[in-house]
Image (cartoon, rainbow over all chains, first blue to last red; front, side, top):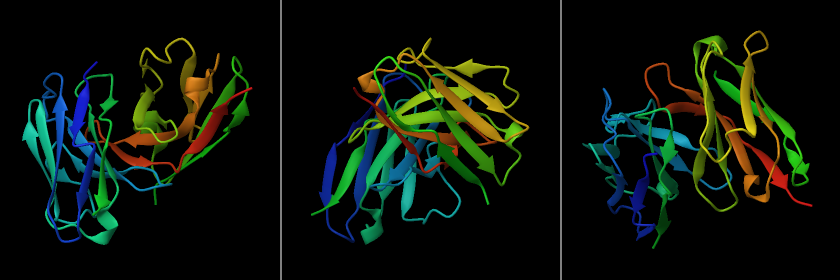
Length: 110
Length: 119
């Protein structure tokens, strides 16, 4: 099983600031793709896909969200936080047939 | 419009069974792998099971293998999760999710259904 470790656990920032979230895999998630996705989840809602293949934005996702990385180290960056961006963010790997998620990073208003 | 709607949740005693359903619409259901993901109260997301579009293959993590069974009825556009020998740690919101046609990520999710295992 590939273990994903997200850091920090909580990020306290103000609207307009830049957010940088990290996701580290216990082994490479490169398997004919950078097989890593990012999701946003707000309280009481289902997760929403933001980024797939480490750096491709999903349909309708604003360009302030960007993903980068390869192998075992990945980053989700929100260039300027909007009020609606305060939420929990999860990374997920799909490199093999045992899909796993990170434990989440909460982005909260400072 | 793609829609996934879960049903069948509720309160069940430890050791009991429950079957969840996920009604799909707005896409060619048989053409997509489908998954179940759960989230315990206040916790993170955990993948629970996956089934191929033609039902020929399934996968489970060790935590539910032998107790949970994923299945689908493509004629009814419905995904199922049969949960047996339920434990307190199975208490969670259960989501069905569609695997993208282009890769392994989940592009659509249902709204979730709560399963509570308690005496």
